[in-house]
Length: 485
Image 1 (cartoon, rainbow, N blue to C red):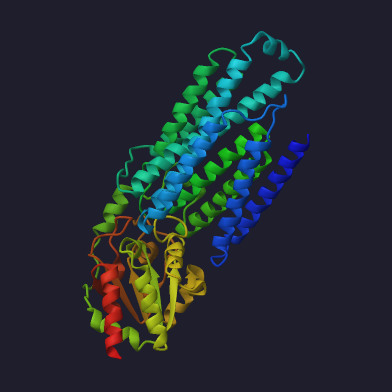
Image 2 (cartoon, rainbow, N blue to C red):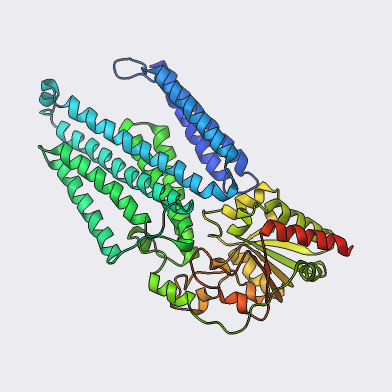
């Protein structure tokens, strides 16, 4: 009894650390501390379970060598992957790790279903079902197993497709009546779930059929999604994994697992809603796989002719423009991450400030390939957190800005979101960079952005194009500004 009380106290402490960690993650300056606090809580919960848990018969956990072997292998793989991953590959790593969480929830459900099947095949267990309420309790447990398995399976297969798409190994694919097929498949999954719960015979058949269809739905759900919509999908899949973990907490009556799952699920859901608002999408459209617009709309938008001509500018002229400006706003995008230019852009910022120029960064909620991608990228180069300004706050400032430097961003500054109803990004709130006196856009080429559409901003009279790799171009800017004395 003493061991169980001690374990429950450990679970309580761990739950509090999860809540504190999540609170600290709400501010970039305390995010690292929050991560460490939550990791400590998870650590004591794991080792407390290993050494203190006992079942109803007083038996401790068995197979400790396998448990510690799994912990060691997972720790080494996770540590090496986290140390070696580039910022450009961070989104797909997040998807991969999230998928592993979904896979764990799926496997737990499979194992527990097999346990129920083997346990209640015995004569004593069958007799126990005659006790009032025993059958209802069994069905309740089976429902939790099925729901955890469905959500975990969708999270796993969906995250694997997201990983493939983000890494360029899987292409966007959609077909006619995609929404209706997805809705129909969900209805079939729910119907077969009912069959698995209520059917006395062929229960195993219905269970594994639901498993297969859930995996298929995860694939169909993510496969057609493309363009700037991927950050929303990543946060939604993350919430799925949290909910699946919470069902595992219900299943094992494990308070810390339940609290952790609820926190991840609720935080992921709230983040998804914020992302949807930033993309002007509805959550219903996410659930039925109607993201990214249609191919015809994208084609129409990308082939549209724009008035005006492209104006190219060199690093020398850009340096003069920025050195003698009063206010400069930098808009980071995925191209900055690709070029690994975050340290150089911080050097440029520091140099401009030494010349008396006010410098800020405009952060769009879905810039990059995952929520908060630009915040993490710039934090890596020690950019001051108070210089990272969110879209709603920075948009009114563009009208009083001398120079906007867009580095590797495209869709989040595309005026088509406000002017072209046929565009896949129409209605998405964007950064109003065109309101500034001068706009300098750094890109490798005139290739369309992640959403696959042309950008009218490049043809505006105020806009000049600084072509080239972001790191090289920014280094040239730094050199030119220094040369000006």
